[in-house]
Image (tube, rainbow, N blue to C red; front, side, top):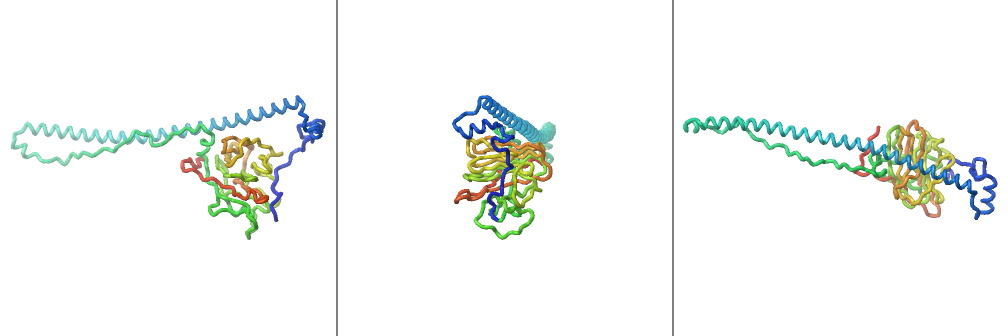
Length: 348
């Protein structure tokens, strides 16, 4: 069965409906006279709402950055303290060894001076001492081995939560083609002959990540390139994989998508996202205990959207490469590798 049209956001009120912000009169005016502007009270309300939402978003992102920076400060100070302790221990060991050798040498010098007072015949009987052997001390550098770089950029601060994500072939729709390393996925021309197991999406062209998260904080990035349609996020492991999939937090999905040139968050109803620079790479940060999933435009390092709520059970990463229309959108979604300098997963 073709997957077209089976992946959808939760629907919201139509323009002019009781749930809409526009009255029937305003809706009629806008519909019949597109050149007319909204009423002044409505414009004031609309502007105030946009400013309030933007203020809350900025405050939330800076609060998140402050929290991460405080944690990073504690980690750096702890690492510095451990390095200081190890260096001081080596220095004390050297001081003890040198003190012992100095005492032995002082004793040997005293014995030699005493023998020098004896007759020459006695001096001829002096033999080489094997009791005192000087050993070279361990070279201890006072240079700090670790690089204590302070990340004032949110993306850099998130790098220590980077997790290595791979795709789970048992969940992939039969038309999805996964790379051998399970880091790429695109929609193929035909369905593959695969078992119709309960874990597999069908007919929606989706796939989940192999890893499941039940706590902690995780961050990963996905290369979307110039694709014209895609959906990314997380979902409960228990979501239904068969039939039409309606993406919303109520149904266990926290995701954003690109379709028909517009970006949306799968809320109820869906939330349009204002994107100044088209993202070629998207970063996703999951804070399980805080009940947050945040999406970032890595291209211009801007915040796209944050879902807030409460999580329970295991969460999985979610991918949909979108449909191919007229030969476009054939490129794969690519899970970006974890940088070698990343701190890795520091959470349980």
